[in-house]
Amino acid sequence: SLIRLDRSTLKQTVLARSDSPTGMDVVSDSTNAFTVSPVTFFSGGKLSKINIAGGQVERIAFVGESASGGIALDKTGTNAYITSSGFGGAHIQKVDLTTGRTNVVASWPLQLLGLALEGNGTTALVAVNDVKSLLRVNLISGAASLISDKLRNPTSVAVENDGVSVLVLEAGVDSAIARVDLRTGAVTRPAAGLGSIMGTDLSSRIAFEPDEKNVLVSGFSVLARVNLDTGAATIIRSNICALSGGRLSGLFVESSGNTVLLSHDVCGILRVRVK
Image 1 (cartoon, rainbow, N blue to C red):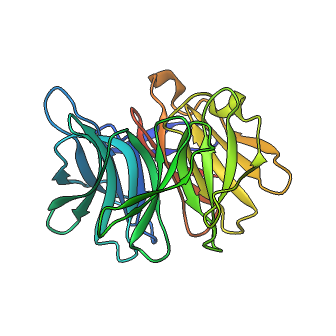
Image 2 (image 1 turned 90 degrees about the horizontal axis):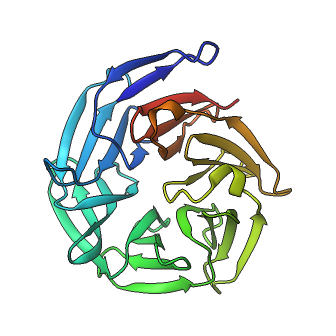
């Protein structure tokens, strides 16, 4: 679904119906959102395009196996890279958003979760559902190399503007934000003790605000702001679609920095004011 949320009354207006998203990315001008969905009884995983203004939904591709939530658009907005899992292990698939053609560009034996493209556009940083690892994957050759195996339940990845470090959201009772040096693999944690906000949710997401001094994090039904200098966390909104029984699965900061788009695996896509 695509939902309008009135901030004062919390009234929700459904604008469009779509498959239950497990991940989302949005083009830079916020005109279209792209969501991935898992395998259901009736079909395999899907990638869908949703027009934010009008609510129209278009199925772009059937990905053949369950989408595990990671999705990133390239700089041109013409291709999406998604993580998926099937009987043959985990994969990164490239989807042509014009033709719907899919192509497996990399494989890994364990489930892959969140991913983010590096500035060169030819490599991706990917969280592995093995409790500890962050990979760099070459999207042309498919070669993967280990950046760090010192993480704790990595779920989501956000590349810093300096290009030499990345933030990784860690889920669990000791949920934290880890900073990984891409040159050495060294790990520091500018924010910890987020377990009461994020919990053990493997769908937790992280995204920079425009000033890069703060990040937004989402998990279960909570959206929070974390200051990277102090580590302080402030809840912006809780109980987002909490009665639905689902969870937040995608987070995108719009260009103004005042609003975000959230995907929820039951309620759909919501726009929420954060400033």
